[in-house]
Length: 238
Image (cartoon, rainbow, N blue to C red; front, side, top):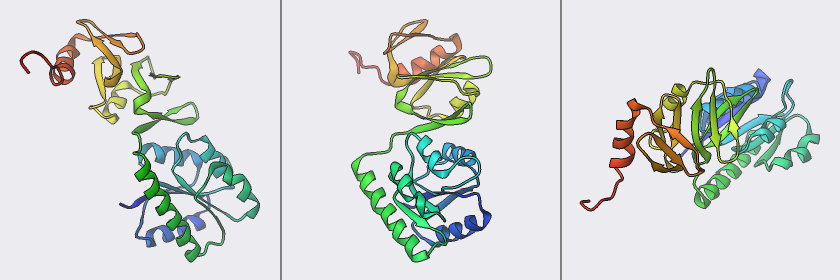
């Protein structure tokens, strides 16, 4: 399996060089090249990234600050022309720290470290499914298992988790299209619920594990019966 790689560097010259190194390596799959932290956030939201190769010093938001802002960052290789950043970078446990100008043999050593870490991580524990949404100026990573329900408001949604409520400017229909239907269930025109968060289902409402009640829309009642109850119900005759 190839390692999905994202490059973050504001200098087109180094974008080309690092991109060439990535393409030359049969272990790597270049998913995107970004010139700013905001573009990198968007790429992380859209793709599953295993490795981030990031410059440190950039005009608006440093590569180090970007990695620190991620709840679950991928493996990171920092590249920079400034040796003094090395100690600061190790706050976020990067796989390696490369100095510009880059040497391809040294780059290969860093990728071998990534390969070993990736193998060890995949053997230790599976990656939990997650998605990104934008709230204000930040992209927030949300683990599927943490979500209780999602509620539509006028021009945004409330994503209610076990610990917080996130308020991205997004429609519930767009979220429903992107999220896995075997995990989330539309029960009302204004509500999506996590199937595992359901405690009981009545005729007109769903009670969640935290005690909250979610209304059932008339047009969704048959779908709930077919997809969530009948497929899993155990009775005397089955």
